Amino acid sequence: MTLHAIQKMITFMGASRRCGMGRFAPMRDTRCKMKKNKLSGLSEIKKPIKEELESFEKSFMASMKSQVALLDVVTRYILKRKGKQMRPMFVFLSAGLNGSINESTYTAASMIELLHTATLVHDDVVDDSNLRRGFFSINALWKNKIAVLVGDYLLSKGLLVSLEKDEFRLLKIVSNSVREMSEGELLQIEKARKLDIEEDVYFEIIRKKTASLIASCCATGAASATNDPGIQDRMWQFGEMAGIAFQIKDDLFDYEKHNDTGKPGAADIREQKMTLPLIHLLNKSSRAEKRHIISTVKNHHNDLKRVAELISRVEAAGGLKYAHEKMLEYRSKALEILSGFPENDYRKALYELVIYTTERKK
Image 1 (cartoon, one colour):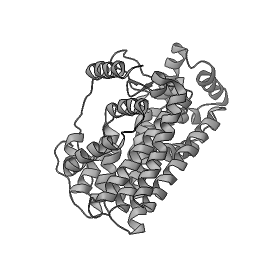
Image 2: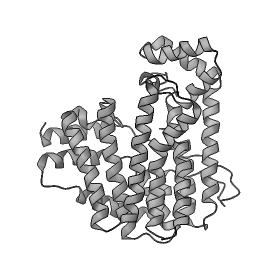
Image 3: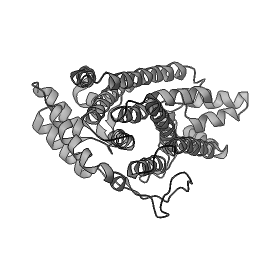
């Protein structure tokens, strides 16, 4: 596929893609002094670090250039698909909260973005997924071999960024996160064979797969601003709790009705993934009912009628309510940790960012 063709495709998909930004009602919390007006969307939350994020985006794009034309085409396509910048936001806000944003903070944000993007590219290959955030995945456009090599390139570049700046503390934190993410993915694959995931295993999977990344954002941000290991550990814990809440919210999306069809997406069920609402139903079911549920997920996940019946049973059993309550529980744990830090604009923005991640509409 030529560069011109790719650019035309990106332009078309960008124009046709629909985006939205919600505003959310405030959560009352005595530990953070917040105004009783509506909580802001991302643009408002970004205000304390607006200039830093803009500077980071420019420098990050420049750093992605290489001497290989094909690699430049692929990385340019990746950059066109960037999301909400939540990961850099956690990095920069965590640095501002614990000192000052500096060159090390930019290095931390670059490492996180490179390594996370590498894992996403590899994940799409593993999952044989053709779409990522509504766009064609790298493996869908350039096939698996190129996708794997691009992921390897991004991974090595992320490691080099830290070594070139002698940022060994940051490298240790991020490398630990990558290890956790890999273990979480393998644990999920292992359990998916028998679909015997208990609730404690589910939380271990999402802690490793999702929460460890957000935790590393917060810990590296803090490490770029302070040498205090206690503060870095607390910021890791804060990010971990916020990340678990974030993933439960993602799991709940699978049961929400889509505007275009009026029906739940049920992507996790089709992919034979056991998430918290479904695990809750299993825990409340008889042995015979469990066999039927597992059979639906394992052998009939493409049967729309059976999947719809299963979703109705999850809702009737209180699975969605239970998952929502667990999400709020972990969100409260994150905010409680955050309340122990000095009150300033960065803490307020982190507070609002956690609320946003659990109240978002997509």
